[in-house]
Each structure stands twice: as C-alpha cells, then as structure tokens.
Amino acid sequence: MKPSPTHRCTEAPQAGGPCTPGGEYQALFDATDEGFCIIRMLFDAEGQPADGVFLRANPSFEHQSGLRDVIGRHMSALPLAGDEEHWLQVFGTVARSGQSIHMSDRSEPLGRWFDVHAFRIGEPGQALVAVRFSDITHRRRIEERLGSVRRTKTVGVLFWGEGFRLVEVNDGFQEMSGYARAEAVGLTWQQLTPPEFHAVSRSAVQQVMKHGETAPYEKQYIRKDGSRWWGLFAARRVGDEVVEFVLDVTERKRAEEALRQADRHKDEFLATLAHELRNPLAPIRNGLQILRLTLPREAEAPLRTVGMMDRQLDHLVRLVDDLLDIARIGAGKVRIERQVVSLRDVLARSVEATQAAIDARRHRLDVELPPQECHVEGDLDRLAQVFSNLLSNAAKYTPPGGRIRLEFEAQPGEALVGVSDTGIGIPKEQQERVFELFSQVSDHRRHAEGGLGIGLSLVHSLVKLHGGSVSVESAGPGQGSRFCVRLPRVAAPGQAAGGGVEAPRAGGACRILIADDNADAAETLAMLFAAGGHEVATACDGVEAIARVKEFQPEIAFLDIGMPVMGGLEAARQIRGLPAGDRVRLVALTGWGQPADRERTREAGFDLHLVKPLTLEALQDALAQMRSARKGGP
Image: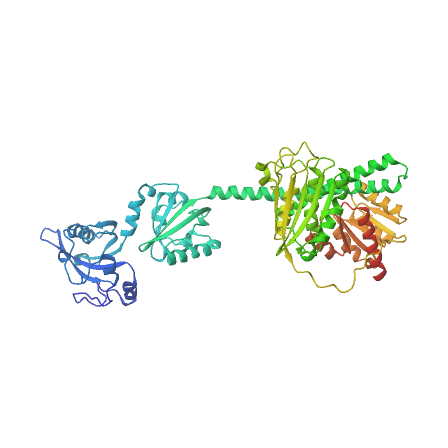
C-alpha cells in the first residue's frame, strides 16, 4: 500500500525553498508513480560524504523502495546493511560536483534493481540532492532470463512501462527499427504504429492488461526514418511491465503480396483470354450455321463435317466459358442468382446439354429419378453447368460403348446426385487432387481428348457456392468413377399464378444494323439475317453505326461493345439521343456476361445483352424479343 500523501520536511524550509515543491508542482510530485525524494548530504571534516538526511519523499517512494517512514531519518539508520556507503558516494558526488547521474544499480539488502536519476538542487552549499527512481527488478530478471536474446538481431524485445512507454529494447529491435536504445526509450506505441494499425495495437493492449498476454498479431511498425516494416508480435505482462516479442516478417509479407498480385494477374489474364477467344468463335459459329442452312440435304459428307465441326466448336466454347468462370470465381465476382428450383429441371437441362457428346461416343445413359419432387435453392443455370460438366467428364473418360448413370436420392435435409461411369477410373492416390485447378490425372491424357484441368475445379467451386459438397469414388484404374454431389434441400415453392408465355419467334422481314469491328463476325451475322429475308446493313465502329442509324433507320441494331474509335456503350448513348433514337431496339454483343457488364449496357440504353458466340436459336430468340418489344414500344 502506498503511504498517504502527508509527508513533510523535518526542517521548516522557506516557502518555495528547494526542498518544497511549488504549489503548481505539488500534484505532479505526489501523483507520479516514480519514487521521488530530497536528501541533504552531510560531509565530514575532510569533505567526504558521511551521511544523508531524508527531507522529503512522495507517496510512491515506499512502493518503489520498500522503505517506510524515512522523513527525517539518516541513511545510516535505514536497513541497508552496508549498502548505504555505495549510495553515499553516489549522492555525495552529485552534491559536490553538481553533475547529475542516471544509472541502473542493484541494492543487495533490498533485493531490488533501481533505475536512478540523481541531480543537485538549490545552492551548492546546501548539498541537496533530488533522487527520482523506479523499481526495475522485474525487467532485470527478465533480461537475465533472456540472456543472449538481448543481443540477438532476429527477435525484437520491447519492455513497456507505465503508460505503455518504452523503458528498454534489445539489439534486435534497434536493428529492425533503426532507433538507438536512447532514442527508443520513452516512445509510446502510438509513435511506433501507423494510424491504420492503432485498432490492432489497442486491442492487444487491452488483451494483455485483461488476460496477461496476447495472441499473435501482425501489424506494421514505423522505423526511425519514417518507412514501415511488418512485424509478428506477441506480448506478456510480467510484474509492472509488459514484454513484447516481435519478428520481422516484412519479406514474407512482400512474398505473399507478390503471390496475390500474380494470382490477380492470372485471373485477369484468363478473363481477358476467354473474352478475346470469343471474338473469333463468333464468325466461326455463324459460318457453320450458314453452311447448315445452305447445304443441300443430299450433301451427306459436308453435313457430317459441319456437324463434327459444330460439336468441336461447342467443346471449345465450353472450355472458354470454364476459363472465364474460373477467373471470375478466383476474383470473387461470380454471383449466384438464388431461387427455389426443381432438381429434376436442373438434371433435365444437363442431360439435354450433353446428350450429343454422349451419343457421339455411343454411350448408354441411364437416368434414375425418384417419383417425388426435390427442390434446392440456387442458380438454375449454374447447377445445370455442374452436372453438365460431370456428365461430359464421364463421356470423355469412358471408352466408346460404355455406360453412364445419373441418379439422385432425396434424403432428409439434402439431395444426393450421383454420376457414375464404366470409364478408366482414378488411382486412389490421385483422387484427392482431381478438384484442384489445372490438375489432371496423369494417365488420363492418352485416353481422352484432354482439357485444361479446370472442369472439376469449377464443379467444386460452384457446388461450394451453393452450400454443398462434391466427392469422388473409384476402385482404381479401369474400374470406373462415381462423383457424388450433396446439396441442401428446401421446401417446394407455392404454385405460381398463371402460366409462362413462350416468346414469339421472329416473323416477317425487318431492317437490322450490325456494328462490329471484326469484319468476319459482322459479315457472317449479316449473311445469317439476310438468309432469313431481313434487310441488313453493317458498320465497323460506333461512329459509323450512328451514321447508319440516321441513314438506314434500322428497327433493330446489334452493337459490339469493344469497337475502336467509339465503343458500343457510347454509340448506344448517342443513338438514344437522336430524334428517333428511342424507336431502335439495341442489342449488345460482347464477350463479357457478368451482372455488372449487363448493368453497364442497360444504363447505356441497350434493350438486350447477348454473349458471343451466338447459336442460331439465341439469335432467333433475340430477334423475336426485339420485334415483340418494338410492336409494344414507342
């Protein structure tokens, strides 16, 4: 317990004298946590220090020194057991020379270490010495236990005292921070921490004061020169002080950031690659559709060739879509449009999308569905993509004439969908890796058309986004495989009012403008529309498209977004600003299909957003929608 603040000088000094703190300093004198006292030194006839008398001491004196009731007592009368000779010499030197002394020393009788600052006050003849000191026993014990850690440069050690000010640092911290010991002592944690990391540091301070230690944290520190470095730190309270240990992890953080940057570049590259690949795919798709429409039915070999090319183009389009989806998932840009959907509808779409590939390899597909309905919450298109990928994978890695089985089981709380095959199987040691990006089973490349190793990774990511899981089972090479997808079940939705109305097909001729800087894409699309009896005009950029709208007055305009000179977005805005611009139905043609991309085209004034390459069915549906809207529009 600290002594009460009622100490007084044993002498009766003059008001404001050297042993009496002034009124404005009295509160500071009494409130400071450091021990403080004033001693009058006594010298013998030869001028050597013989004793000292305590004239004043603050309330913290007893707490810091362990000595009681010292006012008016001589140093020789205190229980110092000979240690007083040492302090007499120290304080006597200060009183005679007037030079202050700052030192750390140990009092053997008291069993304590002290940080001592002694300085002369008053006139030289008064021999008055003021002593400010604090008990640093805990810190010295820690330092003794640390031993060589004090000198190590791989671990920084910081000793925090009252008010979380530094009272000591080791060589490691000096090396990391650029501060010399004398410069670091007295700094606060706020001075060493950037403002954006104050919350982390404050949390650590609160944690160590409440629990005695902190969990490891990472934050930045400020060097003496103002630069920053990353540290992994933890702290523990020891006695009246807090000891912090910190590792310099700047290089690791730089390496992690470099990896993240490389990963971002990879995602950007994949997204750009997929987008750019869609541009040449569009005229190829259009050309095949033109051939299919114009070849005579008796041209069996050319029609078979067109069919083969169309199937391979479908495969290439799926690869491009998978590339783009993986890039979007990696960048966190995939959105799941959640609604309650029938699992039967999902699987029906998946079978429809893959039936041609299954038939081409003469596989037998068995579909076994339970009699009761089963509903899940999710994106119908994305879920259909999951099972299409699994069915395509089964068809690819099953020798011609094999069997593929699609089944699902409605269990309480979840639905299980299984896709099994009689294919080449997966070695047990490689089954855990099949869902990793760009991972391929080593023996699969020579058995199938191959791929990029992203299909199953995409399945895993999409199923996870739906709150489900996917697993694989295989007895080994030649034993086939079975993939099992688990999805949370939900209650069936209420019966929707009314029935769906199918969009009308295009009928009758209309004026159509096609603007695309890819001349092949524009020409082949124009040929497709011309084959349907429509009047078509083309443009190679946004500026020419605006001029064509004024001259040609199209009813429907298909505008590519990424044209030179002026892109499709700006062209759409200017077309909408023309006197008759509202009468034109605008369709965006682009390789980008994310919700944000669709929002940009909508804001620019487009009525419809189409993603390249387009199938003939997609073109017909788009034309039907735009004709229907034109009839009901302005």
